[in-house]
Length: 412
Ligand SMILES: Nc1ccn([C@@H]2O[C@H](COP(=O)(O)OP(=O)(O)OP(=O)(O)O)[C@@H](O)[C@H]2O)c(=O)n1
Ligand SMILES: O=C(CO)[C@H](O)[C@H](O)COP(=O)(O)O
Image 1 (cartoon, helix red, strand yellow):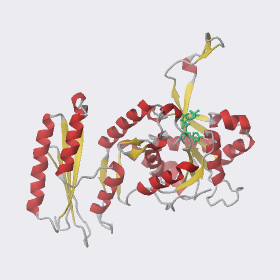
Image 2 (cartoon, helix red, strand yellow; image 1 turned 45 degrees about the vertical axis):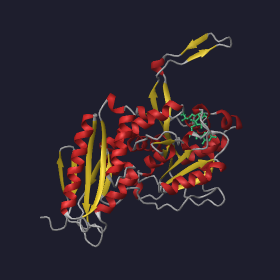
Image 3 (cartoon, rainbow, N blue to C red; image 1 turned 90 degrees about the vertical axis):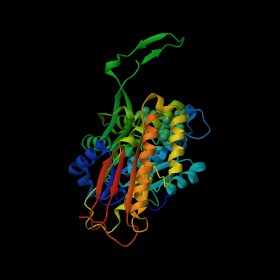
Image 4 (spheres, helix red, strand yellow; image 1 turned 135 degrees about the horizontal axis):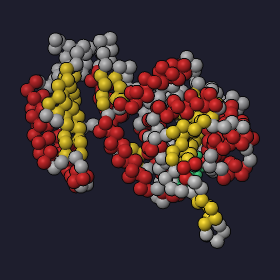
């Protein structure tokens, strides 16, 4: 087993009092704290996750394995890792990667500062990759450096839109039933063709469901199943819940998942994933909480959060202008308004007030022009002391498609 960069075991939030949350994330976080999360918090390594990421993405039809394909310039797998590591009660995340992609994966972990990740070598099939991931967590393995969790989540590296609420549901159900998995209604009817390509029989669609991910298991249930299963299962099997049933005699509890849980499989799925990411970015809300005893600067934390969460950083107007041109050229804004947030950081100790107002006016002018092209430009001007001062108060005023965050100690 090869271990990735040393990740702290703490939560993945950017700072203790500053988080980028969407509405659903916030609700899920609250529920996890009151239910599983709080419990998990006092039991070290209660939940771990195994991510098979060793496939070649044949159906995608591009040379790069799909988990490494860029979406908005960031590899797909990085979104999935982010979705899991922001769940603070998942203590370890084991990623199975082929030997030839090990360095690529390490580079991604480093570049996007993923935490709590361990790498293992993938197998030649998905089941074998998962088995390798489980072995890394099992205590009966030599040189095991991780502790065996009570529950293990299994989640495909190519399903980036997994939310905390569904993870919580499968984990809670696995604790009670031994195994659990997300399901979705079938989109098409399943039929069985005969050898001569004629219809043999069809299934009644309403009675069946598509099995998706994430799935969760009591660790012993799924590890025992993998240890007992045949080479045929490891070679041709596609369903972990089935292994738990066949070898550990556990009937998994099925949990309704969201439509976004689908697996990125074909090239068009990359475009769909990109749209969803854009939509989510536009829904992000930055929550700045009480900062009185915070030793870190809110400005610094916010800057970091924006870098990692939104992947948006502009420091000059040329870049904003370039982005607006790109949006316009892409014809996206013909179909519906596109929202662009232009983020600027100003050190109020070195930048005089006049210059700040200049920036405000500049963004307003930009916004007026952009609006004619169906692009809604919002400015986020963050005015904060770079060094030496704690921040006591934050003033936020919203003004004609322009958000202005301004904090200074002596404001009130
Ligand atoms: N030997 C393998 C094969 C697949 N996977 C992983 O299992 C997940 C789901 O599999 P699938 O969508 O089938 O991925 P690929 O095998 O890469 O795609 P394809 O079947 O189109 O080749 C993916 O995260 C994939 O990387 C794996 O870890 N090891
Ligand atoms: O669908 C699934 C639920 O069990 C699995 O996620 C898995 O993706 C199936 O694997 P594959 O498409 O590689 O055969």
